[in-house]
Length: 346
Image 1 (tube, rainbow, N blue to C red):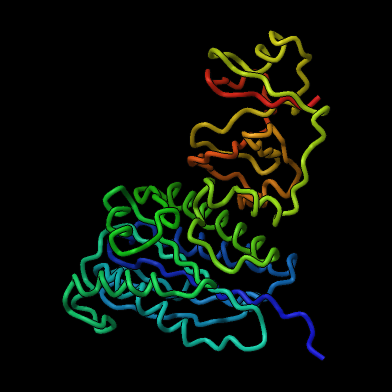
Image 2: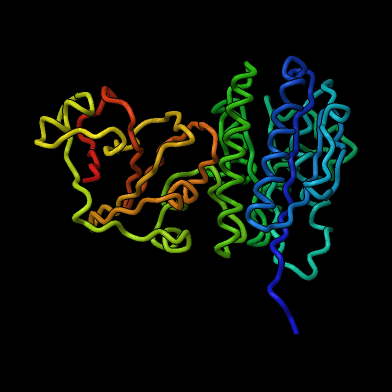
């Protein structure tokens, strides 16, 4: 008799270890170790088996941990040393080709890879792990590989700037699987770690709903928030008598605008529209509004829908024709922007 198939996640970190990462070496280890302990905790909570692979790349690409149970992972302290150039394309190709040889028997397997780099590709054509010495062929190889990956594969990359983003798109990385991080500081690396954690949370919660892969791990747009994902996340609409939507027509503090609109301000009862990139605290509630019907969804599932982990994390709004995201305010003077809306829980 066949039982329910296990969820088995194969999560890979492909880390730039070129010379320019030297000043961040200790922080890279710390952030990677934090990500691994987070994965271990969430794997137990969600009853998912997670296996971790780590590659480091500079002039060459080296697999330092392969498909190891997340509950038995060592620290990366002895395994990460920076020095050399940036064989980024060779690292993407080698990591995905080797992971593709992992057995996928007896379980619902899914592969999630994060590539983290602080610079441009400059060494793959000289790297023994690369299938070609021609840079153009390497770009085409990566693009073809991404295009032909099965639906249970997710490949994401964190790059340092817009040029890096353009390069990644030229190599076939889906636009919403590319994030930009500040490679100049330890704080930037910490924030990159939070972005990875947020994307991992979204991935693992999606797995429980039968989603096997994503081409929008860093997005809050229509690929992430739509009718299907709302239903899959188990969100149910709030009774319309329990909330009111108020248009904001000028710059104003949140309490001031609630009172001016004829209501009593209650701390935590007002939600502002997410309209710019900002840090959302771990305890803040999220609400999702369907524009066409003014139907509102909220609850812990709304945070999970966006992949928000239980730490403070920076979130950026993306274009969505059908849904708007609102964030709970716990302050009295949060600035509201004109041409947005305020959601008031009654």
